[in-house]
Amino acid sequence: PENVGILAVEIYFPKRCIDQAKLEKYDGVSAGKYTIGLGQTKMGFCDDREDINSIALTVVQNLIEKYKISYKDIGRVEVGTETIIDKSKSVKSVIMQLFKESGNTDVDGIDTTNACYGGTSALFNALNWIESSSWDGRYALVIAGDIAVYASGPARPTGGAGCVALLIGKDAPIVFDRGLRGIHMEHVWDFYKPDLTSEFPEVDGHLSNACYLKSLDTCYNRFMTKLITKEKVEKPTVNFFDYMLFHTPYCKLVQKSYARLFYDDFVRNPEDPCFKSVQHFKDMSVEESLRSKDLEKAFMELSKPYYEKKVKPTLLASTQVGNMYCASLYSTLASLLSNVPADDLTGKRVGMFSYGSGLASSFFSFQIKKSVADISKILDVPNRLKSRLELAPEKFSEVMKLREELHGQKGYVPLGDGSSTEDAFFSGTYYLEQIDSKWRRSYKRT
Ligand code: ACO
Image 1: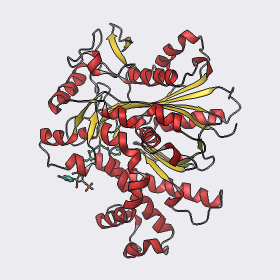
Image 2: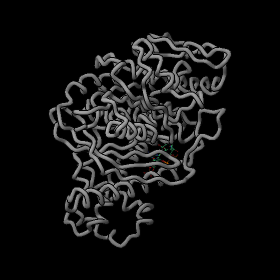
Image 3: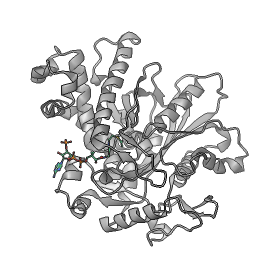
Image 4: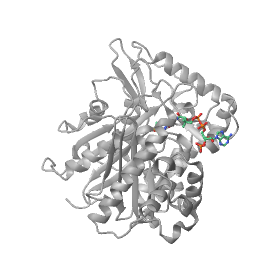
């Protein structure tokens, strides 16, 4: 099959959010730490009526309805998530409820997990399936989502929640480049979830940042080497990409990451005239370059005009919703598709960097070969963000406490935060109705 890629995209994020400037005050940290230091303006959150199953059910059913797809035409469903509730039972199996009426149970695929990387692994599985002898001509559906919550403390403002569904098939407008993936995998304890009685991760934030940037270097350089050897591109640079999408734990890290690609280009080709202003970094070791604030500042300065044009528009949802773990990278795709006019996107090449702690990472790319105007209209991320409700940090804190207390309990009806389902959810949202005495969860839709 030719032109294998994305035919449809749908995103879900919670209707409720808090303002990060107000959270700075509430947490008693210096003004600007979350908004400027981390680059976040708002954060989405869920009460105990939402879980990974409900947000995945929501995004799938909404995609099917909005694009008028038949469940019969889907032959594979892959879920990437690190929000674990039933441990051995997959989110994919819960999604099969939606297929019931169609009678289609011939649906390959299950869940895949490694921190924020599961969605990318799910996507690669779907693409590989379509290119393989197992493919039967039907679509694949990739779901990437998480509820990202941290214990109170410095990591909490980098939470969020969201889910993205991608319909994968042939003759797509968004076509993945073949044979160019740059992969890097390693054993590191930067972020993991060993305590199954808690939703919170064990996280070494600064180590995770360092691992992210080092992985970016490795994956990008491997991708560039393939561009040179396989595609015979001479002296490729970051300008090969019209837009760049990154896994986005918080937006400031993405701005630094984009600048890092310029540094990687500089190491490969220091004589390029565009690097005149940074020649004094020529003899700095790569190890030291990761620690040097001067270098970081210089390359952020150098890349800034390009960042504004090629990266910033992709961070719309991430800035206002926060980290969605597996969905985070794919939310930058949704933002790109609905925040840049569709006419400007046709013919453009886009790079993607995926990172999941622990760690798994890759750099890959796609081309927009046909108009994405329909996808853009359906996504409508800017207006959906505007139609949310802002709650006070006190309320957010209460909700986090509620989730913490009820995590892992059985035989109860979710309490919510006292708001009606109309106030709490966009229409068409699934929510948890009850967890019975055997921890079996059932859902309703608004
Ligand atoms: N005004 C402006 N900037 C400020 C202010 C202020 N008042 N106060 C602090 N800052 C800046 C700091 O200088 C720093 O910027 P820099 O890194 O460019 O120097 C930034 O804000 C953050 O401040 P730190 O003191 O480094 O923050 P802290 O250590 O408290 O926490 C961290 C930050 C580690 C990112 C934390 O939020 C965390 O652990 N998050 C979760 C882990 C994470 O997201 N990792 C990323 C990859 S892995 C993943 O996706 C989970």
